[in-house]
Image 1: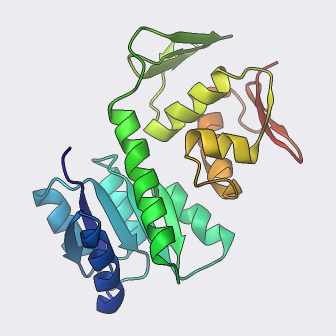
Image 2: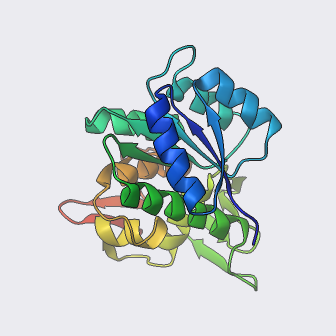
Image 3: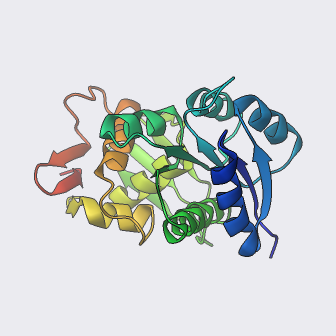
Amino acid sequence: MPVSKILVVDDEKPLRDFIGRNLAARGFNVYYAANGLEALAIFQTESVDLIIMDVMMPNMDGLETCRRIRQVSTIPIIVLTALGEESDKVIALETGADDYLTKPFGVNELLARVRAVLRRANWQRNPATTSSDVLRYDQLELDTEAQSATCRGQRLKLTRTEFDLLQFFMRNIGKALPHQTILQQVWGPEYGREAEYLRVYIGRLRRKIELDPSNPEYLQTEYGIGYRFGL
């Protein structure tokens, strides 16, 4: 099995070394950058599998670096932030980050998030579906083998996580699904309390499939519970 390559980007050398040392001890190949400009240079020359990147850095911060990478790649990105406000986490996710870690964090939390993000990326590159499985509801159609979706006859441009989330909903039409259930089924068993993930991704899906995202026909909010798709 190929060894995953991880790029660690942080202007604080002690933290950069702490992350890299613990990843290397678990068999990962680690690259280092001290700011966004260095990260972009490495990203353009090395085929890395994951980027772990601080938000607050000189020369180019993590959010701007994330935006530039997202213009050309869907590589998984975990952002590191010392800001605990939920709005800051939402901004990071909206910018294109797949996950975040709030400083300070421990080795176990770091490794759990790294493994979860890499596992999701691997599932997305190598879907388990071996035969054609087309899901349909109203004017939505999702082909799990081709990893494609259409709405009202138009091809949808979905990220991998958006596709997986929509697929989960379309396999559970009419059910009121709790936040924790959705997170653990789509993101992984390590998740369950990150309601902001769902708000960001539900918002994205609504903008892509609803005629009026503020008055959704497909993705309904079940207040105090979670979300329901259809019916």
